[in-house]
Image 1 (tube, rainbow, N blue to C red):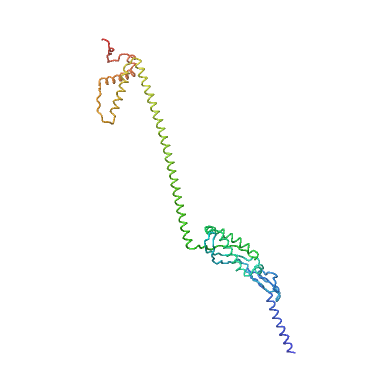
Image 2: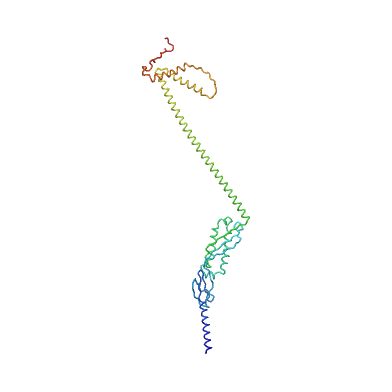
Length: 331
């Protein structure tokens, strides 16, 4: 009896341990950032999200454990031939995220290898369709084209390609030297163009300055000519008034006005001779008595003009001076 009880106890203990093992196999904890697929008899049934889950032991099992966080995949360097037959080395990096664990687990085998090979193939395709200059200057456009192509191709796998970046593009050394010479030539060309443009602008500005200077000089000459003409006009008016006054005096019978007029011209002529820069010796018949008489005539005109009221009117005898008889008549 004791042996039978002992056997039952052992059986109960074994069954209890088996139940504990089955319960532990049926309880699954999925960490954050991961998703597990569940397979029943080898067929996918559902996806376990982060948290505590219970599955049917023996019947169900965990199929694939997928990382749902964003992953980074380095693209190794490879040789790319551009459209103008230039050989360059290019590498990059791919950022992708699993959106559907079931598709990522069962639609493609070796997910990372598939993404890597697809990216490398499209890098050769996209970069091979461009010239070397475009390849070096349009890296953003290359990244955008690669992202669009690879993301569309990996969509059936339950992936989302977030970014593709070309890290380095390395042309051969001889090509780099040729590009350096080309860049130097282009810079020298731009410098010469800028220098020529500067010379052109300077010449234009000098011409404009000379034009303005000539315009201002012409304006000055016109103003000066206008003022000279005005001065000559006023001098002519003054001369005309003086001549008119002398003519009126002569018409009134005052012969001293003639002497004033002749003496003025005589003195002006002597002043011009005296102011000549040429060294000359002039022998002129100078009648000092006539010049003195002319000056006396000027004095007589002044006296008659300003003191005519005390002398008894125009044509009267001047006090202190005898009147000479007319020429050709007797005493």
